Image 1 (spheres, rainbow, N blue to C red):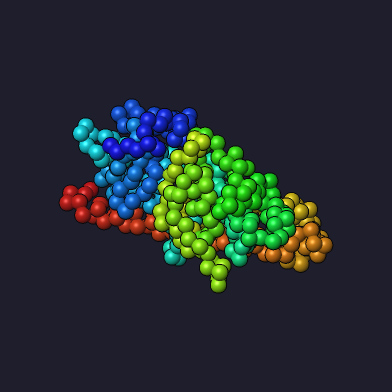
Image 2 (cartoon, rainbow, N blue to C red; image 1 turned 60 degrees about the vertical axis):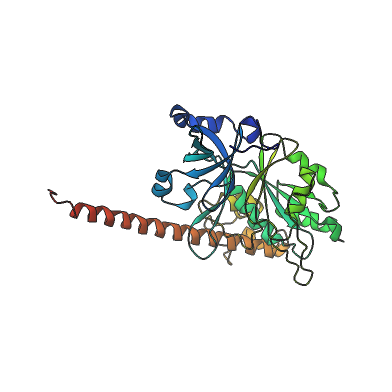
Length: 364
């Protein structure tokens, strides 16, 4: 087992352990396994945080070969049940403890597959740049996925030093991030960082998410008090940043909070499931829609449409309403794809079972 100054002799609680995970771990504890938290996912192995320090670990053969979907395997932030053989520096992961929250997206590439970006997080820190990368519609998309994750989102507007109209930008974001803490900072100059640091409490886990070049690595360097994460300047010609983080990683902050760094995402396709995230993010629109004359109003010219009246009066901004409809359609499409995939998987399962039955030499 390898240890370093950051992860030596931490209690489970300082790593984010609580009664929820203890309840899910009970059956594995009875089997003599130990709890550990996934800090880094490598190609064929993992770095785990434990009370004793860091541990390199691999999946058990059974877990690797019996897991049906990729999202059921360990992700960064997960708690796992691990066995450590005496005299062996490699642990064996036997199970993933049930997750308390998970920030997910549909995997990039057109395939309908859930990708866990961050597991077991308490706070999702949505970082947006106040430079040419600023996009209200993207912030709404991240908020929708955040509310679906089970974590509490906050919005951090970085590069305030590059924004000549900071008050206007803050007002715009506060209009779409209803009920969400919004903080404006300049990480490179260390301005406005204290309110963000106050949101990161000991024993809790926060994940930094956002597109490339918004300054997540610079924020982390300030929070840990040293230049640990590589940073890269934003291209002035296109206003887009370069990837500086290549993998997800848990970082223990000096104040006792746990921070997850994630690579910049060029796209965030919603995974699907229910529409709670849309309802939470666009609660103002849905509240107005409740006053439409018809309960099934589609807001497309029906008489007595309260949403149409709000759009005409300026109470609802057209771009926000169009994004609301777009995300609704995207969720509906993803749910259809998931249902079709589940049906295909079930057919394949029965085909295999039938083939196995017919191959039995003495079947009845």
